[in-house]
Length: 259
Ligand SMILES: Nc1nc2c(ncn2[C@@H]2O[C@H](COP(=O)(O)OP(=O)(O)O)[C@@H](O)[C@H]2O)c(=O)[nH]1
Ligand SMILES: [Mg+2]
Image (tube, rainbow, N blue to C red; front, side):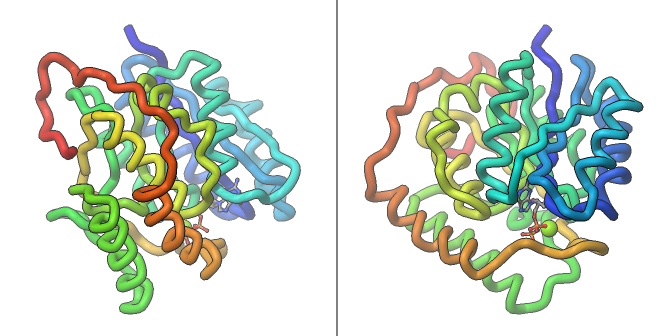
């Protein structure tokens, strides 16, 4: 039996969301993860007390853990710390999700099912049939979809949603892509992880999801983060790449493969 499913929840000032999102994720994973599960909150010293709420939840539930980091240093480094911790503790599956209900915790079951069915990396995708975005204005929609299209063309990939942060990795996928050397943040971080997985020959599938804007709390997305992603894409394509270990796909592929 493979290891547990670990869900990493990065948080910065999510006091209004953290308890509800942890409970909702726990309820879904209790059904969807027969191998067991763990929810790991990675908090960057949120001044609004998110970390203390997470600590209380960890005290109440043995499936909740918390990593406290000193200061806000971006979603990328927070995820890397979470990945390291999960793999060190024997994770069989590692999942990413925003902590603001933009991603529907119910979809965790569908991402996990795609990986159970043979995918090496399942992506929650807004830009495949059945997926979408609610609440966003035209500008934000244009920036997001335009960003994914730009990255897809420059990188020569088939993946439609490259900037999303709702994912499920098989342990072996994460291990093989040398995630420790990913330096980018924000959207660029998400693009880089997916790009590395596709390049390494892994089966990457997109699972349609509907993304909704956060109902409470504030977005930390900035122009700086968007600009970083613009700049990263050509560097990924034309710059020096870390070595990739080529891993043969599972013998029996039950899911469509994007290369
Ligand atoms: N630990 C940590 N989490 C962060 C940081 N920046 C954003 N997050 C979390 O990452 C997720 C996505 O961020 P959000 O601001 O909602 O970005 P948006 O959805 O693109 O507007 C949320 O759960 C945030 O709390 C950070 O610097 N550190
Ligand atoms: Mg958000």
